[in-house]
Amino acid sequence: MNLLDRLLAATRLALVAITVFAAAPAVADNYPSRPITVIVPFAAGGPTDVVARIVTSHMAQTLGQKMVIENIVGAGGTTATTRAARAANDGYTLIVGHMGTHAAAVPLYSRLAYDPQTDFEPVGLLAGTPIMILARKDFPAKDLEQFIAYVQANTEKLNAAHAGVGSVSHASGELLNSILGIRPTGVPFNGTGPAMDALVSGQVDYMCDQIVNAVPPVKNGSIKAYAIATPQRNPSLPDVPTTAEAGLPAFQVQAWNAIFAPKGTAPAVIGTLNAAASKALDDDHVRKQLLDLGSVIPARAERSPEALAGLVRSEIARWTPVLTQNMH
Ligand code: ASP
Image (cartoon, rainbow, N blue to C red; front, side, top):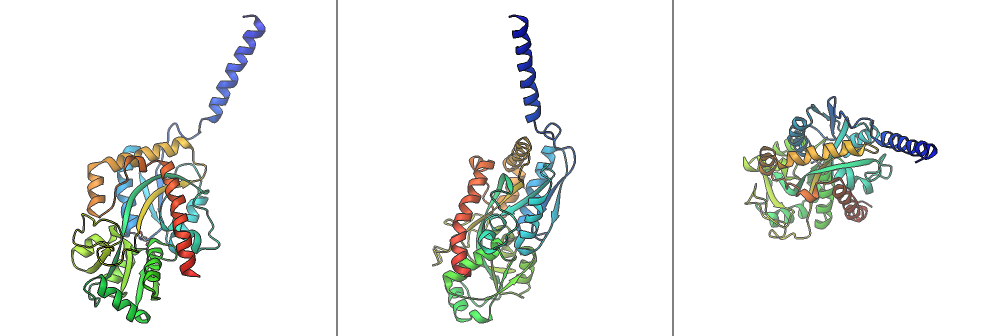
């Protein structure tokens, strides 16, 4: 090799080194080096908050940093989701979104300030959460058939609780109401944690919500559960019939919670977070807590960022026609 060739080879090597260096995400090496903020777009004590706290407390051990939950409420979770979309994409601000913030809100807000598909990097699915039809404990119906007859006969005096327009409870409540042909008064709360308090105290009549919120009050008799909107019963509440068994097969909804990061968060950071979330979902204590509350733990193949991107896409496609028809 003559001198010129040697010089050219050295230059090429140097260029490769520069390219590799330039492509390496600046934050990945020592990430995370400080606490991570996890936005929960609803009030503390509701399903999103509970799932987020269970999983992130284990992730924090894996990552060696605190994961600090920040509850930011309003507009069915879309206020906080907008905030998360605009946060620095350095891996230190994440959001636990769900079937509402990242799907049902799309057709319901004509001026939604974020696009769930293009303004976020999906990190990973945390839990599937079947939807239940729940009512105050003295609601005058002993099963789903009687519930349907009662709400159809008394629609103008009914109050249905939800967590704001575009939330899971709102979207699934709209679907239920449209199947039953009823128009109750919707009562929005900052999350179904406070909505559940109102249901327990009898201030509102009924609500559709994620099972995570329902297991303790159903078990202790402080609310009634008429049905679960999934093909199978749930082991955490084995006496509650499916909607198909109870005579309303058309009402089928399983919601979900998942972690998202702002668009442009480095792939290495997403990979680190995804691995920590998946490790949490394999932990016996985390699994027990989630399963005791009726969650469905995603299988390994459902936990990747790509699988979550696919879920968001298919959920937007599912809810857009349903909610467009029902709301307009
Ligand atoms: N389950 C709620 C919803 O209806 C939100 C929450 O987690 O409080 O979207």
